[in-house]
Image 1: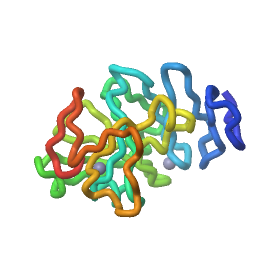
Image 2: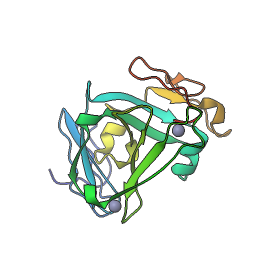
Image 3: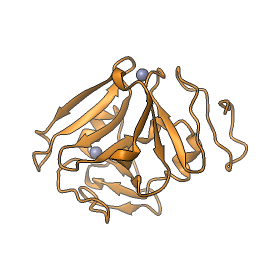
Image 4: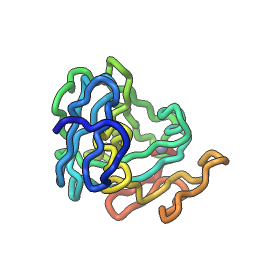
Length: 186
Ligand SMILES: [Zn+2]
Ligand SMILES: [Zn+2]
């Protein structure tokens, strides 16, 4: 499927704008790709359960630093369902535990070439990957199948940002039906 550029005209069709160096992302009814900014690393993942576990915004202080912005938009994919289509050898990782109340280690996995953060994983929640939504190539999915359902760590949300209407508001880590969190940050 060739990337489409320019304004969206049809919300029912994929929207694959020209972004960075990859430009070969795709989506189907059941699967989609996520690519780093330079294009060296690409993942694919399912758009429904059991592989897709949750979609959420995180306002925690770590996510503000890690995202070099004011919040992170994430979705959780269970381990056997998150696959590399290329570039696994171009991933590097950085983890630490001193900001995590449970002493879990939260590890960031990012592209060695362009620095794009692909996903985070916690030693306390083995088998779950917190993928960064901004790397999903079909931008339509950001507001349809992957639209966040929850805002967490709302107590550290930047003061000029309002709650998103209709999104569940949670102080601290979201304790969903699918996974539990007890940490100060994810
Ligand atoms: Zn890259
Ligand atoms: Zn966070």
